Image (tube, rainbow, N blue to C red):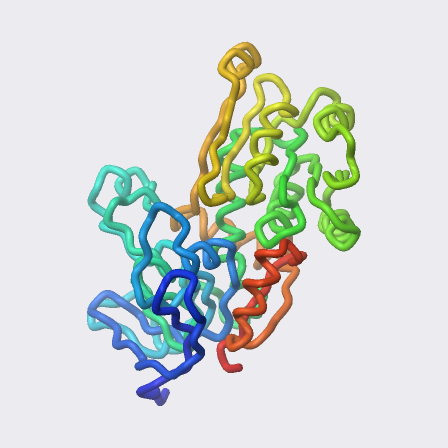
Length: 348
């Protein structure tokens, strides 16, 4: 394969600054890395935060964002034995870890203090050629629709891990806040495939239609519901046993602590900048509520999440646009107008 010297990428020099669509050098893989010709990259809310720089974790600047890249291996380092040229590969949020700290040894790679993050602490997938550590890169079966699989590499893995983290069992009610977005639409499907009764919470008729088609048993429009806590508890007969919070609303997160069933579990996934989860101690203790944080999954979670996709149990409701249109996607994201997930085609 002929690898060009330069490529198109979206670069920002400053936090919240202009998104520049321009030519940049194609990187060269290190001894343990693969070079992936990224065909498609999902656009995650985390990418918006990386651009804005409003999280307490500082970003690399200048930065090429993106961390849901699916493509083809075109070069590899001399020590790479797990990928061959022409293989399909996925680039994830966790691009590299140390593999020796206590967290890595317990398979908590997302908590590794030396982890490198795609599109955050190192250049990511909003470019045509990107680097990935061969150990962390995801193996994607040949023939897979790369536009469809791209969101699974972060959104899918993240919500699948969150459902596992909830510790709830099949047959119980699981509520998903922000159910109509990129993570939420996949959370509804994974929860359904794992045997849960799914209550989707979001707004707009478009998102309601999509969530019900994806497997939600009930949809509650928070904008049209006077007393959401009472309504959710009424539908579920006392409240959902678990709540997966993928919305970026501090109000929605705190409200979930009110309607969750006693002895239930609230899992925090969405990361609204500066938000605080406020749990009245008396209520939390008396009702025996558990609150858990769940970041992205590890390598095993990734392969399990991909297995649901390859077996046709989940799919990504996507809108494909050119990489050069990323600014438009971020604007829609800020306005909360995206149902499903936007994916950028790096060739455009």
